[in-house]
Image (tube, rainbow, N blue to C red):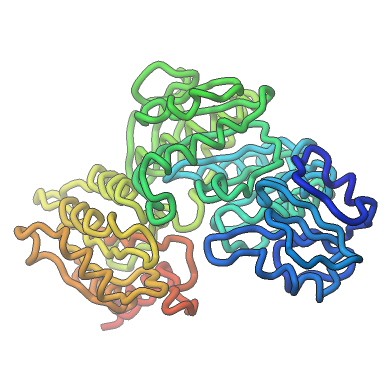
Length: 494
């Protein structure tokens, strides 16, 4: 439905305008290729391109209005121009106005942190559907409108796409939406204009320093999400993380906490952990879950706490949670005919890799002869991302594995061998003999299977749910789970 430009600018701080503010707008876009008559083109300064360089193209395409930070010297008479200090921030408010504030008509919960975002958001989505609600999900793995799956390319889409999805969710009858909120999204204003019913913090460790520059900037980006929460929202934090309380310092939202180690609003304790699941005590109730590992104990606590804060009965929440399975590519198991256990996990940060390997170590027990299953880890690091973590990842893999195979992840536009050479610098001399470097990821997984004995555990880390491998800007079909199954089948036929 068309909206007048004047109505779309509600709450937007303007520096200057020219042309008719009564012009009708039928489309918002930051992509000049999607401009047509009735379009408001918003020139956003991005990390790769500056939208201001495409203003002339947008006008040639028939744009009705241009919003920008710097007015062009030559302006078309038939076009309305709006100058603002921050285009991306203004776009958030405009998108919310264009779609008539869908986030205010839903219970929108954001999840942020280095690790666990996808698991917590997905588990909340599954939980609330099992409780009888229609729900939406915005995640790394996929966007979902109840049972309709929509492919995704970023942890957090642009703010126009978010509002488009939210209005579709409303029209489908959704009442709750669970959304991953990345640090990039906060800095790039991709959540501007959204009204959240709650925010959840999982943890924070070194990641994305290629984008943020320093760890302090990364922390501030995560904290920025909680600073934006309204008085009516809840802010739920992991107080076992040493920066958990930092997240809540300036928020006006209701402050809540969860913990396995200390006093908190929602308190949990791991009673038993095995390859078959977790036995936990949560707020004096004993519950068995299908998820595995201490890191998942935190995820479950976060989900439980958020559900209760959203008004659900604790007993109903725990009953439904006990039946849920992990999201794809999160400690996902593939088992061979000879009982070699393959585990595919998205762990792509030092902390995540350490958590998964420590969990595996706690789950392996000796046989009657006292022989413990060996751990064989296949791991790489992505290209065009934080290079500082590469030697650390290799060091952690060596420390907590019996054999390590360094391999290519998503090299993107970097030389795969250059990435692997950086990883190799983290290998302690004592571990040289137990480490192999195989650039081809498929060959690396096959080699891990050939090295494995019955009951050994193979961890394939870094890509998890991804069904591609990105090399020189091209995405090739590649699924760690399928490659592992093929390798098991071929090894069994030899």
